[in-house]
Length: 348
Image (cartoon, rainbow, N blue to C red):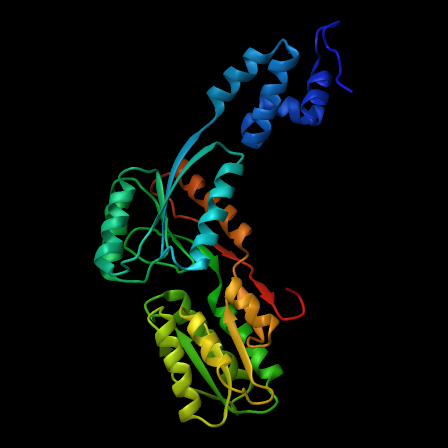
């Protein structure tokens, strides 16, 4: 039933009922709008206009006066890769829900991942935003571009993979050394007996993948030296290359008991695993929960998947970048190591 507020002057309680929020939330919208999600502020404002709330002008002025605008830029890798499309959606959602101000988010995808192109795209984007986050391989040309932006007062964050430069570089992602050790623990506990384990990385210049492998090997050195860890093979983030590498691993190593896919090309690796009858007890651990890895878990091709918590990661990215915009330009940027999700066929 619609409430009639025409007979009396609407109060804050009336406004809270009309907006469907608590009185505390209405008070925050009026007095501390930065503590309330933008969608909620707009909801309360529309309700105030509808019922003729006496303080509607004050709410409008307060919102305009106190709302900080952040222009953020993010460089992601190829748009044809499911993970980066999903990440872009999560970042856009987090930007829209950010309670500390209005975020204008510009996301660009890069097909050409050469250091020269990444550096060029980074500097160009940095001219139009307050802070930049990017997924990139470590390279001196990229580091120099980061320093160029730092000199212009634009903070830079490595996303997924950490980056270095002379200037402070922020980071939002996983503790990849722990990711590698966790994957190794899974092989140690699930494999029916020692054997050879193949390792795939996309590119050793991605510091996250290098750290994955380092943690993986450190676990076995410490806990079980009976396994043989093969030399890591580079897929160049390409499915066709990964498929070819996995096929050759099986041809060259009859006692292959597991495969750790810690980098790109996972579609190809899954195709190669599905194309043959796997030895009983074969263990395979992949990276990131996307449609392909989810189906591979369901049909038993993959034993476990370690994944970024997408929504948590997106919120942490927006928060870290906006904090950097408000901070002293000479202060160290935030390093946010997040927990990771673990999926098996039993919990997806």
